[in-house]
Amino acid sequence: MSNDQAIIASFRLTTRDYFRVFFSINLRKTWYLITVVPICIGFAVTSSSGLATGLLAAGAVVGLVALVLPYQGARTAARNRNLEDVVQYKFSHSGVDVDGKYSSGHLDWTLITRVIETGSYVVIFVSQNIIHLIPKVALSGEDLVSLRNLLRESISGSVRLNT
Image (cartoon, rainbow, N blue to C red; front, side, top):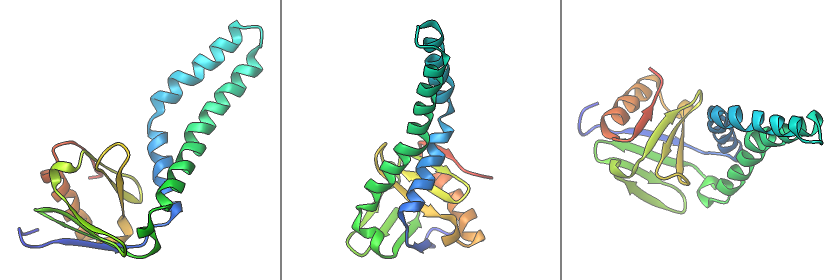
C-alpha cells in the first residue's frame, strides 16, 4: 500500500455480528473457565450441598460467560443507530475514518489499543468498552492482506492477526 492509497470497507452490521464476536472473545478467555469451574466444583464437594450443586454452579458460570454476556453486549451494540445502514471504514497511514448514516469521525492510530482477528472479523479496540468490527467479507483478499500490514505497522498495542 502506498502512502496515499486507502483501504475501504463498506458494510452493514447486525446484532448477530456483535454476538458472534463477543462469544468468540469470551471463549478465548479460557483462563476464566479453567479457574472458576474447578473452584465451584471443589467448593461443592467439600460442602454439604454435594457435587450436583457444584456442577450446577459451574454450568451457570459457563452459561453466563458464553451466552448471557455476549447477548447483552450485542443488544447494547444494537442500540447504535449507525447499525441501521451501511457504514464505511477508510484505513490509511493517517488513521481510520468512519462514516455512518448518523455520525462520522476519525481515529488516530494512537487511540487504538488492541486488534484481534477472528475467523470472520477484524476487531479493533479503542478501549475496553468500544470496539469496531470489520467483516472480512467486506474486503478483497488483497485489501485484507494490506489491512493486516497497515495494522501491524501502525498500532503500538497488542495486534493478533492471522498470517
